[in-house]
Length: 449
Image 1 (tube, rainbow, N blue to C red):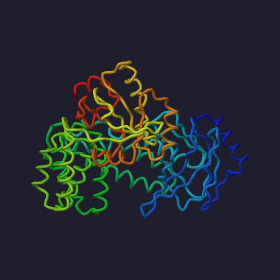
Image 2 (cartoon, one colour):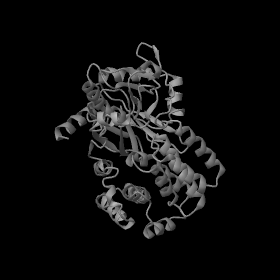
Image 3 (cartoon, helix red, strand yellow):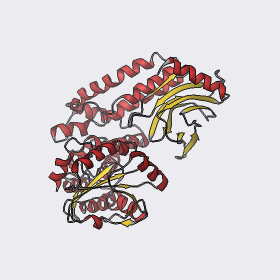
Image 4 (cartoon, helix red, strand yellow):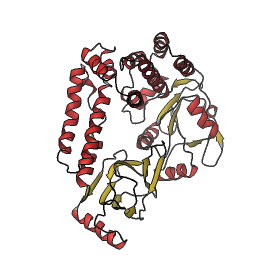
């Protein structure tokens, strides 16, 4: 960001009545600019102890500049700031003045921000933290010792950067946070190792790590397991489901936690459509798990998921077009149907739109594969506005209430974007089809039919 921009920010602050000096403990002055601003939706979305969220809107001018005075209930070293489909994670403290620039022109990049003045060192650190790829090299998981060395190398520069920051409470918070992240990523090891070798390896170092952490709280273990379960289906799309369940079993020496981990992981895999070798995974789960509630839960999930195997009849999805006319999947019979499940508020979904447009255009006027998008937006206006923005050239639909229920309860979709491929005869070809951004999308889809 250019220095001249910062001067303009300060001038704007004076014009709208924002001061430039800190008043520790009091209101926070938040000023700056959003580059590429096209939405009125900008707000802090702060988690509360009761599980709910406190929304604090930021007043932004039509040109993207903002100058607001905000009363925070405490210092927030990890404050989610939403701007349209972006979520920035920044540090804001009571009584300080922040001058910042956020670039929202490049979809999917949420570390494009910069602070100058107060909070610069803290938020520069956060910029580096959130720019770090989630996982750079799974191949480092050849042994737990190598995996930990890899993790240490990932976080060493951030730990070193923390040592240069004078804000002691902030440094304490993120020193603990980095230690937690490194520990959580350590638990990913058996999944990544299994993806490399095809089976979960026996590793004495990992067993020692698990044994050392047996005294962590059930809550901390569950949080870690939920992070693992939420990411494994997407990081390791081809992982064998049975081996993934066996990997989850190795994450604790406590029997109840073993069963909980296996249940959470298998539920997530099915919800994401990752059901490679599901029958064997289910049989293994049923053999080793004793908790009746877990058994009942997985029995229902897996039996229903098996109904979505290739060749099974595709459950219907009811939807409406822009005029309100109702459609069903049967209306598209006769040609294979590629379905994009998305929502206007979903950043990764919107990232796929240009790729889907390119794919649709490549199919020509008489496509061998039909393509439609079905939004799960609850607010029709949000959906319509997004369609105007992207200029879709293929059929767009909004799931009705019945359609929403079918997507979640019959297709077990727990996260988007998600892509379905339905054969010409109305049977399932894949409930976890390749994304449009896949380099060989046409060939991959045809191979599934």
